[in-house]
Length: 141
Image (cartoon, rainbow, N blue to C red; front, side, top):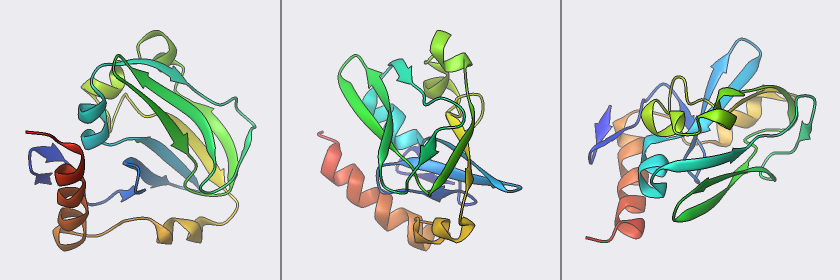
């Protein structure tokens, strides 16, 4: 769905820092959402965790950098990294060109899948107020 010019699929889960989470079987696929990648500008570097790394919900474990911005990636759940998108090392701009597809960042196997229930999820009535608040906060006209 489009909200204020941003593509925000309503079937995904979102953390407050604008990373999306998609459930695929018993794993979570995570990436940066459209609002965050547009706000950051051209992504030039992605530090991805190593496969097998234990992650803790709400704790930082990776970084994303653009020409004007340095961001931290936080885990949406406790678990273990099962895969990273190695294409991002050579082409971090995939996040800008296809943030919900080829620009995915990593996969984790959560130790408790129910932790995703604390993320932002739902239809327009849930996603629009959240996004519009951040658009107002971060965008300067």
